[in-house]
Length: 522
Image (cartoon, rainbow, N blue to C red; front, side, top):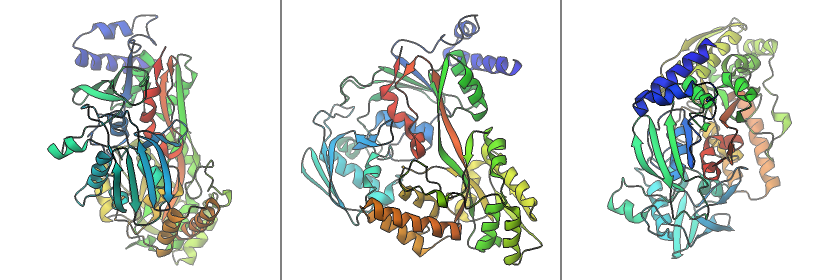
């Protein structure tokens, strides 16, 4: 009771700062008011973010909070629906003309927020800007693979890639591929004008973003609710308190420790999916884990259930193989139990590697996020039981990223998700032909894995792709470029009067802001 009262009190203090008064806070504590007090304002959605977005540029990946806001301002040729399947956005239709050639036909009623009509010239200018050498676009390498962009008329775009790529539809649907006005971009390279369902009308930097529906949005009747406000709650306890007190209609990153109470609250609903996952990366250039036998030993030594209990309050599932959802057509159960807990097998592998007496290693993680720190501590305890002495290095997140990119670690804790629900999204974690990234093991390169990823992208036949990814999974399990640990639950909480919101399944959970246009309050 005390913790809940403290959280509510902190929330009231925050609202005093934002609103300049005490009335709203006092009202929230009045008997009978908690639950529907402030958030259900007619025509206004209040969405609680996990942090204030560090940026709003349409093509950069600055985290989930930033993505949730920017998909209200910007839309791509395609997007994702609540079922996780690509859907029409600025393009009303699309055709695959060949393995490397795609045609998109734009809607006739799509307009940018400055009133200009969306044309094929805007698509061409956007994709070329993303592919530029100095671009900071998340998908720069994918658009650099474009051979040509033809604009036969204002509504049609024909994109030819250098190589066949069946995943290009997912690239066109990514929230990081928003189309912007070419005219505005030409006048000012920092002026990004989009065509999304909402536009920003006011910003209280660090705390709040207010938006209103765009009256020329290309989907008649949408967005369903005309005003949208994002409130930033860096503290997860404040975010949950805002939901429980009725000060937010929807919140992202519902904390794992709060899921039980929210799930039992008749005034609230939650939508939880297993999308992101935790895993270990290794230094392949130096140190003990250049030996695959020792990487495999680690895989068998970790008590994954203990990680789920300690870091995620029991919310998640063991991941003993390559991270593919069981709903994927490429999922094969025989590749999913490779890393079962087996300390005797781990010791045997260490003996085979000439390390029967044990060894020492430094594990890189971060103390900034509890799930990373707690995962590292369980891994440390598990490996101690087989004779591996693990020293933890727990800097802040920014330094952890820097050390990971530089390869200044023996092995490291990571948590992430793919960019779309296809095995090709795993290139982010296992394709060593890409430029160095803290998300992958430092120095790992395997020509066969890279060629299998390339073959999977270029093959149109589902059955042939299954064969390709089966071989890839087996090789990845043998070489252990990563050691998966567990799926973690990712949840949104919202009031029971909210309809139309959906946590998009799988890796796409972080893109669920795309469906806010469907939300109604009533």
